[in-house]
Length: 335
Image (cartoon, rainbow, N blue to C red):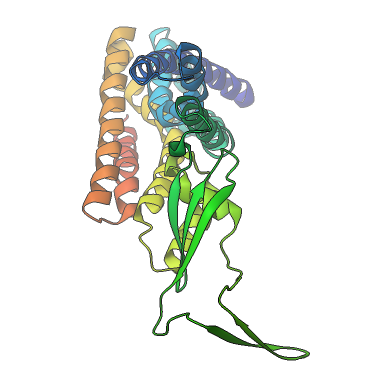
């Protein structure tokens, strides 16, 4: 019996959330399309703008899933409460804790979906969309096509210019800064089979920097997977470089993903409260207000944390912890 009710609640919540997410993505995609129309030039015209907007929908879906989960759960569970179905479940002996656990299963499914989108779908498509736009706006013969970047590897600084979207590089310059100059280079290498002395004005050296790392240095944090972010953060810290922007993006994704699990439980707490006798309009309004407050609060804190050099872990988890606190208090007050 419990399994049947869990599946019923899951279908209701997931269907409502999917409907809300489609509406939000339609609006976000439209705004993205309108904003890009002002930047059309060369081969980047209306068909390419449409493709760009479509390719960015997964990364937008990742950002909107917590809000969609809250509004969708409020609408779905509110409809059940309006038909007294949740009251019947309580009368059948299901406690608030038991119902919360059943609802949390829906959140767990959405958490997995959110994690897959945020790791394997959204970032690579966002990177491809940005590269496609750049190549269309600046033709291959245009010098602006290649992004320049500086990469530090210990005492060595590399200046590179990307020549195409496949992260192939040309015009690579190497600068080594230490107490001695590299004029009339004479190098002694100690090998297992002996000692080798090399004298040359041109030195060819190997570094820990690889093609993936170079690609990360040219990509926006939004376009990197969580694994790519962790690798690049480790590189930055090893070279005593500022990694706060990438750390903030990493913890932002982690908090967004886990917040999806909280939203259906919060919706259940509100459904048990004043929304039980309210209509769909009231539930929608509450969901929109809470969702916008969370979205704006998390975005503002994440940006301000980078500006004022605040702890990225605390700043990005604070909105989620606030939602969790509100959810626990609302559930405790249910009689």
